Image 1 (cartoon, rainbow, N blue to C red):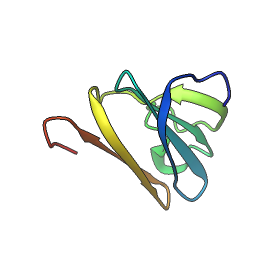
Image 2 (cartoon, rainbow, N blue to C red; image 1 turned 135 degrees about the horizontal axis):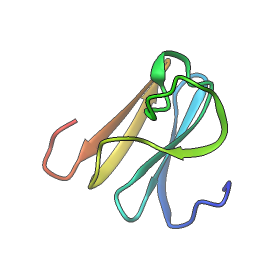
Image 3 (cartoon, rainbow, N blue to C red; image 1 turned 90 degrees about the horizontal axis):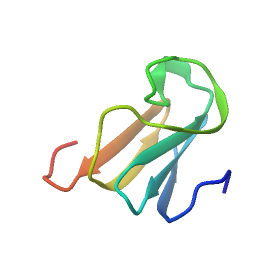
Image 4 (cartoon, rainbow, N blue to C red; image 1 turned 90 degrees about the vertical axis):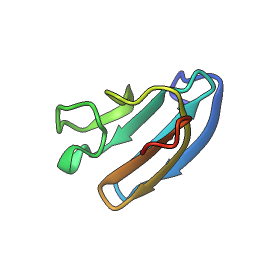
Length: 76
């Protein structure tokens, strides 16, 4: 999938998609509206970009123009 390997989960969020890799990093692609890619640019990307900030992610979810990451310590 777009060059990502070791993907353990995927989620959709309206106009964006999200992937969780085994190493605990989250990746996003799509429209970027309202910062939904989490890379602090607001610019659309047809290929995955690493989400800025969260590490040790264990679960992901997506909503309309939003993405969510649950970390191993229970924080979102």
